[in-house]
Length: 191
Image 1 (cartoon, rainbow, N blue to C red):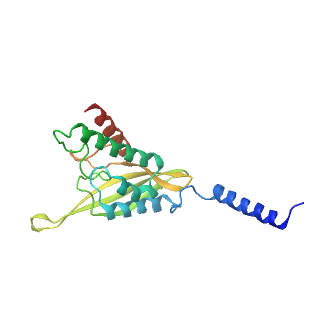
Image 2: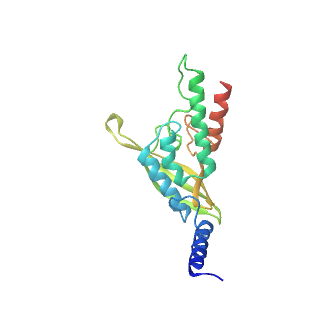
Image 3: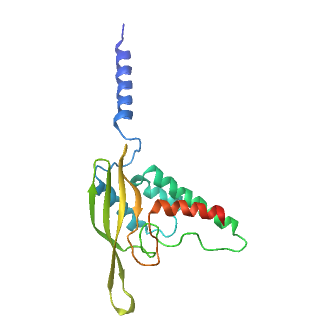
């Protein structure tokens, strides 16, 4: 025979279990579209304007918009930079990666827009037009390029999984962010 107290406990347990099943594991904001995830990424990017590999404090700000894999690779690259610096503490060297990691331009972007996403059911590529305003030599110039965010649908909503650099100039990153992060780790172990 079920008591009134027993029914209440059972209903409470069912509610708790359903929240585990129906709500994402990450307690932060969920992004229901690739466009929302891309916009959130670039909002954080412009606010922080992080140079080099982001440290733990800066990575934490990006965590709500990144996949677990990309977040882990950023942490791995940060550990690699620390390892490399420790190996070279007698004769200090510059970091393995210098400049803005999240754009094709080493100085980074001063604004972003427009962003357009080509979405499939569980993945999207979002082309972002980035701008760097140069106010040197008494005139203003707008340097423009396009990078692409690779965004996937996770259990916690849409998240940035990789960045494809679109810059065509000689200096600056080329290829994909994940590859660069893995290379930083590799270089730190070899040098």
